[in-house]
Image (cartoon, rainbow, N blue to C red):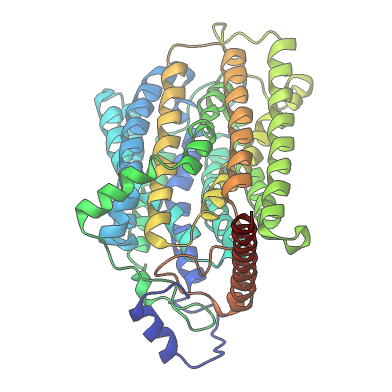
Length: 494
């Protein structure tokens, strides 16, 4: 076992073959659910607003809201990259609580501009959210990749994502309910923002329920790992080394491009549909997110596909199929119908079946693409390590570079670039990035990392796997040594 002395003592102190309930307060899965409810209340409602285009405002306000989003995601990128190291120092509870403060501030800024009080507060709200969201999402990545065993990482990632998406489903349902009779291109009423602010404040309180990770126990009674923080200079040095790792460099293009199309789909939704139809599209978009998250999680964890490496390649093929098909459909629609965003918004209603059906289906398929592409890459970097500090830095790296990509996309969209040009660029980046990710999987994803990292406690269910792996390693080492000795003896005879 590659564990510290303190952790070995803790494991030995536990009665053997414990079978604890999953539904305990100090269960890793229950703690993941708590994170999921924070996502439900905060980014879930925020993303429901984002999906409406222009922050739920009128289409002519897309420029102001996009400028705020550029500020938001630039700061999000910086706070995300540092987020993993901050979590390693202050712990996930405080990081999550700080991270939850930005969402009600941003929703409040949208309510402010709705009252025609000026655009400065939207930029301020975006800046605050950017600084805080990096911590929140880094914590989500940290907990969903560090707390589960290797066999359950897809499940944990999906659990938090499904709850996040359900927050957006509820948010989108609220918007749909108040706009169902609105056939204009106007934005949503102020009451929607008040409801969202209340939900987001509740998320801040829920974040306080997280336990210190050292207090958690798996169902076999064992702790997860050693969570002793490093001194700041060592932590920052380790962060710098993380940014130079080849395996993370290989998946960076996928990370960078994974959310870029949000500005495109949000702007297209606001431009093409009227208020009630874009609310319906947004509602269905988030339902498909739930389905997409469950699908990719099942493939990543399904034993039917065999070893972890085989599951990784099967999941990658599924991602390529869904992403490729959706993008080809989108680009074909934009090209065939000669969509030009410089023209007057279409304001298509759901009663106009011939104009509504095609783009509606394409839009909601992007909802499925969102978690399928992103969660696959979360799972991929989680195969590189089980060590909490390393996964914290990986999670921050992921959210940081993802946010920089999103900031780039919103910056591009502020210039009114034609939808088809954006679509072609983002599709190309995602497909090339996915190819590089498969190279990273081929080179760096192994069937297990247990027994290879200091401070990580091996779950009871994986002890046989680790012993078999070590036996194979020792056998290979002995074989290589025998070959070397034979070659040495042969050379001496010569």
